[in-house]
Length: 187
Length: 173
Image 1 (cartoon, rainbow over the protein chains, first blue to last red):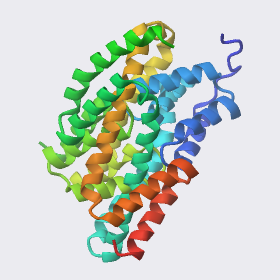
Image 2 (cartoon, rainbow over the protein chains, first blue to last red; image 1 turned 60 degrees about the vertical axis):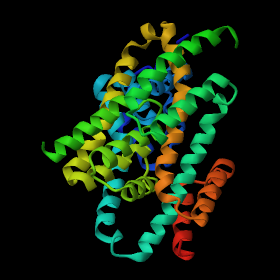
Image 3 (tube, each protein chain N blue to C red; image 1 turned 30 degrees about the vertical axis):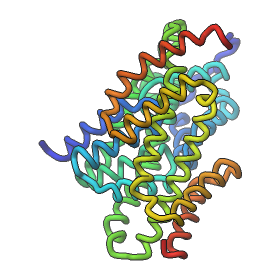
Image 4 (cartoon, rainbow over the protein chains, first blue to last red; image 1 turned 120 degrees about the vertical axis):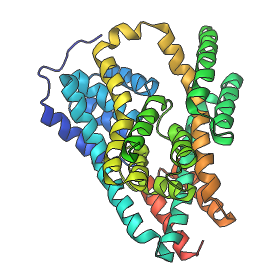
């Protein structure tokens, strides 16, 4: 399918700049769409098919989708050094921001009643955002009774009983992959 | 063992088991940082997660906050490196060798099988953070309003969180 590859691979600094811009501006988990826009549409470094492969890899491999996708795209464009600069680009701005917030929290949060009140509202808002992410992820699962059962089992395991996540994964993933095999005849 | 090394080890572990995306890892993060090692209280854990919403980039950067609370600046810098590296390395390897891997049917099955498990893990994340933070009806109302507004109106998550914080101050919640 790959009719034309990019004529010349981009330089490491060009890759870093694109991913740094994404790392600076992508709030609330929408970074994959930003990467798609930059890499497929604006820069034309990858075709659509290759990018979708990257999305698949980013999901099945452990870790956050954004940094995984950056590593995948960076590796295709410029090998392992490309992967390194792409990941640094998407992670470092947020890393610095959270670090500054952590330092400010340590200095001020315990002493100010207003900051504490603000944090109460802030965490409630964060829970709301998490709930909206869960609602989005729930849509494809709600169609399958087996899927709902697996989701419930994972929730009870890590949420209610606070089990070791590896245990939950080792028990559930083989089962759920096997069930996915059985449903392959239906579209 | 040196606390910085401990935080690094825990973060590396989180990076290896974090299937299902950033929110899915929250229950295991809580278990490690709050329950098993006692580096943070549940309230600090929730505060850190909320503050990470104000920063760009992946939400699991909350681990910077947790690393800082647990063992200071060096741990804060090493924790995100440890958590990102396993997945990023595997992804980069896949970027180089995907043609061969894509032919394997079990990879497709695994990907589809991961969806419901990831959902359950994410719901676990909401439960773990919500349990310690939603301590009153008005706070539950705020969480519900934010969830609905962000889902339907496509409001910027960081703005929604800041408004929720302002509501907390204004109404003394």
